[in-house]
Length: 197
Length: 197
DNA sequence: GTTAAACTAACGACCGTTCGGTAGGCTAAT
DNA sequence: ATTAGCCTACCGAACGGTCGTTAGTTTAAC
Image 1 (tube, rainbow over the protein chains, first blue to last red):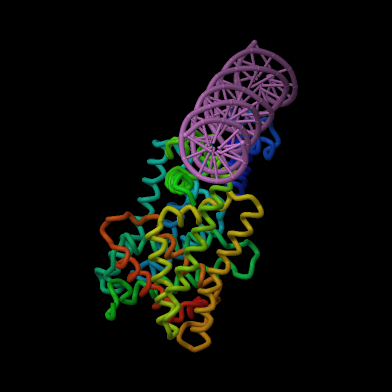
Image 2 (cartoon, rainbow over the protein chains, first blue to last red):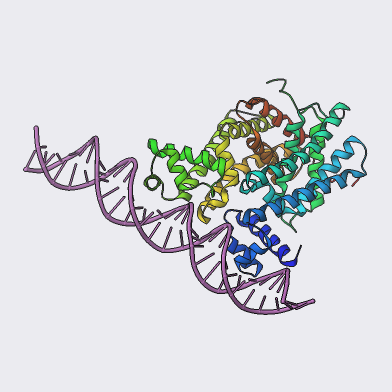
């Protein structure tokens, strides 16, 4: 990827994060990149194509990262801890892209939307498999794997919306909090109606 | 509020939920309401004014609802359970408005934005006080009340993004799941670094 | 000379908003 | 009882502006 193509992408990530996809114009991205807006179209076919490239690379990198986090880890609880930690790390370290990936799916064409949702579903399925392995082994509670995976992922992903680089808490401290919170939640009988109603 | 004003608002809620604020035009809202777009401006000063009315009434109703849920409940754990259940109920029963309230804040003017964020902060503070009461009494873990409140609220709020009316799970079943998940998380020592690192 | 990478200029579409007008109902004075 | 005036609720048409995109051209490097 050429220099300018990379610059345009990172400027777009910054603007989409700060102002949103629809509120950001091609002119904004161009002036942020130091070129004319027509020149954007030499590097990207359309505004939507630019958004798609951002979302696709983010999803691909996220999935690769998770797989690498899990590659050498054995044991059900350890694998879940590694997965949660990896998810949190990636989302905090590439905060802007992940925020866009979670809020700007509506800007995609129908076809591109399907592509991204497929990647997202595949990613979620990794967590659902971890949950099912755990409940089959009796390590985790026997709850609905889909709902539990949504709960885990949205909980961690939300961190990316309030996290401030250089703030009070480090990435690792936040990862600690979420990792323990989730493992405790999965171990307890957290699913099913209350005894008392 | 006149009939047409109510119709316009509910059509706007539906469209903002499905397509997003910026992707929805005044024409869309008008034709959905069965009037011409110029007539919208008899009822609302601007598109942004319409968004603000939606967000403001949602936040006000949400806070009122929570206060009523807590009014007659005593005991730290019971109050937290009631608050979580109330939050989940409100978000699932008024799914569209709450989704908008969590995703379209950027559409507001600076002044209106401040107004809504103030209301949101006041609402979050109710949960933070419940957490602090609990940790002071030794019922809950001694964690960062702000981060815990974010975790609780985003976890429950996220339910509104995947919940389908008439789906596999009822509102009460989902409320059960989250209520127990969160109480367990708050009771355990879920905050702080792991022993092993 | 070719080609990559940028430029200027313009296009058509659509947007939020405004303006002037009108139909119909209510009120009050004649 | 009629009529004049006003108010509510809406309409048709247009405006200024911005948007994403395209076409054609220039620049600079090899």
